[in-house]
Amino acid sequence: MSLQGAKVLKELSQIAIRTLTAIETGMRRSEYVDIETIAKFIKYNISSTEKILQKCHKLNLIHRWTGHYVGYELTIHGYDALALNALYEKGTIRGFGREKGVGKESRVYYGLDANDQEVILKFHRVGFTSFHQFKKKRTYTANKQHLSELYVSRLSAQTEYQWLQHAHKMGLDVPKPIDWNRHVIVEELILGVDLVKLKKLTDPEATLHAILDFMKIAWQEGNFVHGDLSEHNIIMNYDEIPIIFDFPQTISSKEQNSIELLERDIDNILTFFERKHKISLDRKETIKVILDE
Ligand SMILES: Nc1ncnc2c1ncn2[C@@H]1O[C@H](COP(=O)(O)OP(=O)(O)OP(=O)(O)O)[C@@H](O)[C@H]1O
Ligand SMILES: [Mg+2]
Image (cartoon, rainbow, N blue to C red; front, side, top):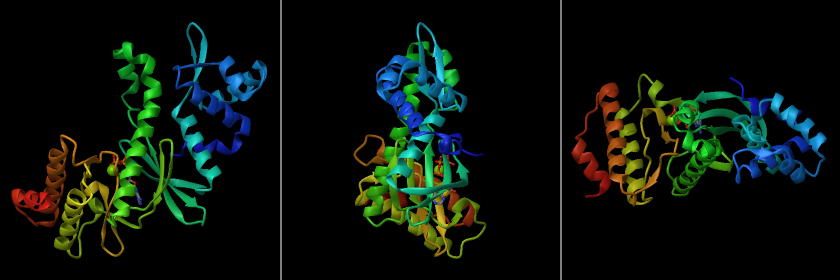
């Protein structure tokens, strides 16, 4: 599936981008932004502004709402376009490629960085599937709902980027974080195979211990818990080193439920290795070692 915001980016003039930015800025104050506010921001008259809005609307980058006034909001495609545009402008990326995967809360694409190296672009998508039903049921929150969807996707990207940076600085085996903008993260492309897809491992014991070591160092030295660790979020690179990714659920070990999350991560890994690679370790003993008790 292609990404609408990326597909239409080349067609967008500077003023169309300014218009999207005007709406994004206006959405901090109200859910829908009226045309007067937009025109003032881009310094165009109303009828010229109207034309630009029509084009953005046709491209599905904005949504028009008619209530006691007419207002506009960004769609996720408009938000994608703004984030990608910013990453191009900064020189972080110079190309956008095919899809790598669709997750529950993200869409992952290949890109090219400033040196023409392949990188990963992860577009966070939080709360988009159940959004319409949610809005119908809970009208009292409807006013804030759309803003908060873009906002929570951005927060999710920010959380992931920060923990990725922290883990990478500690020398843990994670993709190198390169940059982020809004709800999009740019990170190193890991060449390898998702652990879940591998039928056999050369040395399953060593792989299991490397993953447990990751959790132990993260907890004891990095003071964090991955929070969504499983065979789905590990890539075996071509040197057979397990690389851990997907950090939006990560929390500090100081948080109240951190031990619970750590135990769940440990369970996921032990269950997977037991089922698929026939290695069983004692659960309690493993938790003790990781917690350093
Ligand atoms: N840095 C990377 N290098 C290579 N492939 C990656 C990288 N990051 C993500 N991927 C691929 O994209 C897929 C989805 O990424 P990720 O797990 O971060 O997103 P997600 O939304 O959490 O997905 P899910 O809900 O399936 O866990 C991964 O399974 C992996 O195959
Ligand atoms: Mg994942």
